[in-house]
Length: 490
Image 1 (cartoon, rainbow, N blue to C red):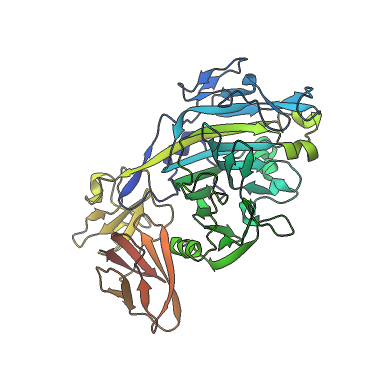
Image 2: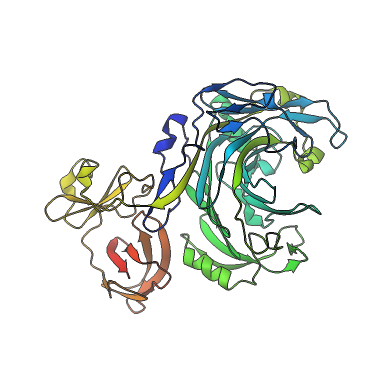
């Protein structure tokens, strides 16, 4: 998770989400921007980035709490989008001085299914650095990053959240379960995200992405790693290396019931080492029927369906203004008062018409330790994020499309020895038996050809059945220890 993204390189960073069976990712160039140009701050609303953005919020509202969004707090410096905050003596909001800040909104909107990601260096100050999606009527919001760079205690977390609103009377739901506050071992209560991003002036960037899969399904990624999933009535969150699958215990009016500590009361349905979509499905099916997307049914049971603007800003929220007002020195310091965005990219899944051709038509033959002869017939290799299989004639069959933006980021099927396990029946429809297992128990992983683990099951010589009824028709890889076989699902 320690990768630092540079503007010149973002197009070469694989999209971490799975586009779906038979699909690849297609860049949405009208919403993606590397900010490798200049836009000077101006005192009026202005489009920039070839019309992709403008320098204000998507309506006349000028900010929450003690925030006053101003056009001239936004610029592009040739490498980054820069939002700068400063002290305001205006006491109109909450009766106390506030902050001048900037806000950026996209001129085009996104709608599911869509993957939206940005590389951000948060402001090292007691304010919120935000990158989010919001419907034009302000009723549906997905927060990609809400990070409190130098706010005591909260600076060690990234709030992974969304909002479902009723405008009249104003009612706001957002997740309050403890796992929505994501912790990362790069930061602590004493050395927060603001310190990490500032890095003594050599600024670092954290990649935050959301795959808005469907109306009731969100996936959140930090530096290319899946960390949290919201699916119908259940959540899955990676906590200290272990996935926790949870659902809400009860409702209190329009909101889930909280514990005495103020966080939502949840039941942990299961845990696992690797994320398993079938487990979160089971957790949702076994839940108490409370939606984790919209528990108060503010969206009429439809989930999130509205097209949304992309919004980027720094703000002084009401609770921050009451408890953690930035000092005048921090507001005046370039080491504290700037949020920088290296790039924004947006992808939509599309049907893949490629694949299946000889790998040499789009890339050189894969190599292993500099020697392509290291592979025997039937083994797999990865070159440039593309998966190949070696044929008996020494040529390579292309498994994933070389023209796709969906590349394999982990060497999940590289250098597989001649498999001792076998699968039957294969092709299969519901159950598959594995033969050739040794003594003891094993974790059997079912992977897509793009390398995503979609099911993990415990097997042994005696209990050697894999359940595959939740899989769509297609080709998969079954991996047990260092052995693997191709599995076809009808």
